[in-house]
Length: 280
Image (cartoon, rainbow, N blue to C red):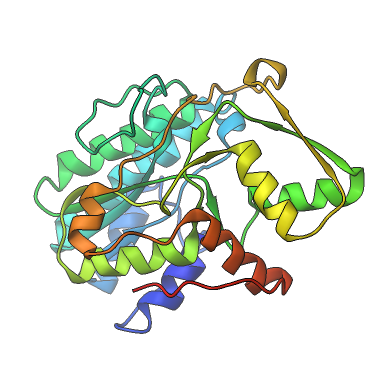
């Protein structure tokens, strides 16, 4: 989902050599070294991940091997060829107990295996490329080219006429097209370190669903429920809103609001006509 938008966006300004999941195994260090050595890139954008949050709780070894060790393998290969590395991380590295949006300098404390595995990936990247990494923490992704919350809820609303959605977990819905453009800005500006990148504003899963189901004009009822009523294998942070200040200073302007991003997504995928906001 993110990879397709990254390729499209980055191809507008540079040469992109796209690699997919079938091309080589990121958990195989020798394969990572061979593939990156042969390509000799200036920058490696590592968007591969095991993102099934609940499945991570039972497939712990696979989660850690993919999200942690896999990121480390890519970082080692980057170090070998002198390439910089972009790694996508997550709001789930935090425990969700904050009373304010999380900044890049806040101490991570993940409450799920998925969050732990992504934090391990961050650690591996920083350790291997201390001066040549960009870690982008993002959240609640949706986009045209992969399974996501928006499409899942639209399908359920159409088939059931009623959906129950958690209303006590707060985060930042993020459109992969906007994230890809923001990534390009950060790369072009030579930014290093950790940067939070999400669409502006925050909401709950219920607020998120209510907005796009209303835009779709579906007759389904949207019922808010608490996390305790909707038990899943993996714990989710109750509040994982990421502070945008650092990105705003770098870019000179905020990311588009999440509501506008949803409207543009619905226009692109479902031909639902809505006002569009131009990304800088």
